Length: 369
Image (cartoon, rainbow, N blue to C red; front, side, top):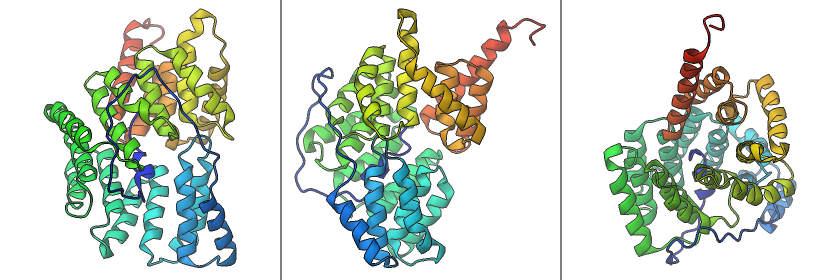
């Protein structure tokens, strides 16, 4: 699981002067809830939009309310509603910087990263120290494997954001230098233990960064300990990262028992969570487990392939590696995904697909070749 979208939940956080001290606890204790996907704020924003359909502030408020919920299970359609709300402003080259920042979030979700950076540039042109814009830029640059630009975006936060936010931004980037991974992890761990996890949206973000570092150090137990306490109200990408950690440890039943009620209660089934369920189910097939999720994912993959849906290339590559092994297809989608996303997990996915193809070519007969 990569961290392509974690800043979507971080944007527009409300800074708190007090952070709750936290030490990871028993990873087997999971109590999680998910809210009804609506809110008084969203309802008010929708009502205001009906009264003032062309007011930029009203439109942006509505779009941000959609974006605040869009990452939750079954709610990805809200990205489209945010896009539709913002589009008239964007088409008219609005000078509202918050509209451009929200637009950048929509584009990031769609993997249109260069256009997202262009939108962010419109924000920073008039507000160069904008915390959320620079955080989002740093994340996109990291996705594109441009660490120097990512670090520069983080450093713009100096003196404008709290120490924990800026340090997490910088240390995540530094950790992608192999020789700096352990030191970056230790520094961020020490900082979190001293400052405590923030009680706002930064808490899950920091947990994901620490878990990602732990995974890259082959310490899945530590990753689980960081992720589990923040599972309450978790986003799709957070749940997928937790599930990947469980799959690495062979906890297939745990993934199925935890994700199944979430997915079945959602109005739509997210590709990423469906993939986690299908992978876990595949591993249990030899024990007589039914193939409910594998069948659903097969139908979804067929639809994605027919549409040549590059936005879901990561899931398609993993499907053809871990659920329905077809190395050539896996390599095709892994390469397509890597054209835009070049983080550690994207590189590992491409390597896995290439190894699978090489292995297939080595073992196939001359006639098959």
